[in-house]
Amino acid sequence: MRVLLVGAGGVGTAITRIAARRPFFEAMVVADYDLARAEAAVAALGGDARFLAERVDASDEAAVTALLERHACDVLLNATDPRFVMPLFQAARTAGATYVDMAMSLSHPHPERPYEECGVKLGDAQFEQAADWEKAGKLALVGMGVEPGLSDVFARYAADELFDEIEELGVRDGANLTVDGYDFAPSFSIWTTIEECLNPPVVYEDARGWFTTEPFSEPEVFDFPEGIGPVECVNVEHEEVLLMPRWVDANRVTFKYGLGEEFISTLKTLHLLGLDRTEPVTVPSADGPVRVSPRDVVAACLPDPATLGDRMHGKTCAGTWVRGAKDGKPREVYLYHVVDNQWSMKEYGSQAVVWQTAVNPVVALELLAGGAWSGAGVLGPEAFPARPFLDLLTEYGSPWGMREQ
Image (cartoon, rainbow, N blue to C red; front, side, top):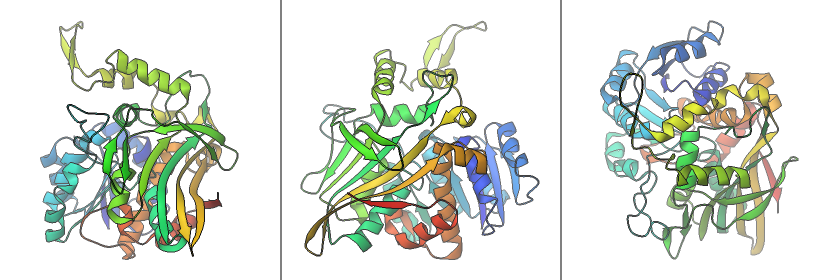
């Protein structure tokens, strides 16, 4: 397997550190718009000859296609933010490569009823091309991070081994992470965080299909394991709600994120001021008027999440709460994965949130390389058997857990 990894930020760098310990691939080309960042990721691996750095603009489909072909890469792993999904997705298809991402193509709210009906849903642009990928015998594995990704694997595992009927699949994400020296320092890409938190959340119900609610709706307190404890969670737009119902039978699917009152208040203020917008605005500069995206300015003003590990303390938890019946009796479980920042920093030099995201596509690549996972079309993690993934994740030294509710 020869992999083109596009994106050498926090998640991309963590991917290289995890993959470097595994023998399943022949080469990994680490490409980024900032060549120095790609070179730094490769240099940190201590001379592993399987890795090399390149510069590429993720928005330039032709350049990405050429890079895939020049290095004879048979897989493109997308570690960029969601606005680059489609050019990278298209480049992989053009080059005949397998495509893997951790977030899907962007949504657009319904123009008249944004908090009732879906407009363009997450992943719609990719699923529109599913027949073409299947006809070509090529695979696009979409949403293969931690959420979406591992949370979807948990849903498939629950359906196959734990339940006869599933009433609700509820992804619940929470943490007790703190960052020294910062009043506001998101542990993940602020660009992506704004996108998913301020868009209308999507809920799925079997009798109704997909529909939307207002941002931060339906708050509930969820008790997270391994010392994290109770965290208030709210509805957030996320790919699992769009993926799970395609392959797993459930009467209801939700995603709720433990954001906290201060974080929600900050996001609302950004929205109120228009600083969440992606459309460029004109601002004066020493060299004359320039066009900049307000959201990019917010991101530039905040610390890079990849650099926060030394200041970060606590744990992060991703998981899927499942309610249903087994052998005619009610059952409720929470399937989860916890990463302690102290452990991930000591073991890999990567903070917990980016490491937890990064480990899952590497596991998936190893399963694809070995043939335990295979397929054609645009497929989510739920389309594949869960047990090989969960066993290999444990082999990577990061076991998952299950709590009977």
